[in-house]
Amino acid sequence: MTQSALYVTQEEFNLFHSIDRRLYTILVVNLWREPLESMKIIAFWIWLERCGFNNPVTKMLSLPYILVNELADEAVTCLNCSITGGGHVPSSSSSSSPDSHDIPLIQSLMEKEIDLQFFHRNRVSAAQGIEKIVKEVCLRAMKDIMDIAVERNQMAAGPPLSVVQGVEAVPADDRTMFVTFSKGYPVCEWEVREFFGRGFGECIESLYMQEVEGNEQSLFARIVFQSASTIEKILNGKGKAKFTINSKHVWARKFVPKRPKPLSSSSPYETPPFPHCPFSVVS
Image (cartoon, rainbow, N blue to C red):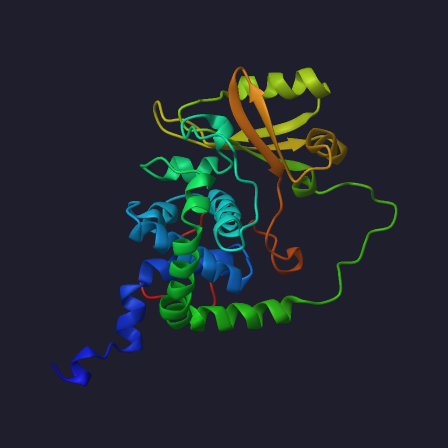
């Protein structure tokens, strides 16, 4: 076979990785995540697929942006565990116990048992495999998207918004908490309201459960509190907290939008038709 027969053009390479490019675009364009870190996140999902986990990227493309963003955060937790050796690794050997998990959304996405211990046990092969995918796949297939995102981010960096004097209204995003539930342990809206109402009084302004069909389980919810101080009390100085609601485990963290607010009034967590970006992506 000649050398020319083995050559894959950039267009062919992009087409083969079109699904990966779509997810990368959502991360860096729609969600304004850091481009280089997002490449590692994509490489993480590709590595998992090569380990036998079925189509994680394809599954994520059908999810709301807010859930994609939270899955990306959990991927970073796994990357810290496997590549840097950091992160909290549960000591429990039971993969079926909620106490052994800190990645509930990834567990719900996969069709196999998976937890942080999996990444700790396979940290050498994970680190080598993910680094190889970044160099051989992501940098080639996504560099054009990364360059545009980096340029866009640099243009967006500017002086902060002016503050209206005498106005103390706190934006809803700054009073919002994101909670996730374990698959197989369904939590109802009334249970969430009752739990926080019992602990913090009439504190909830609005609560948005994930919309699901039929008997499917909501895996996350957004809670807008009347006061931002309620979130501080709930988290107690931590970035993430775990609670038990009627013997079912719930993870809570502050809702943090990933995009600069001055550029647009629309929310990055809506799910408009793909893509909303300043360039075309092969699909």
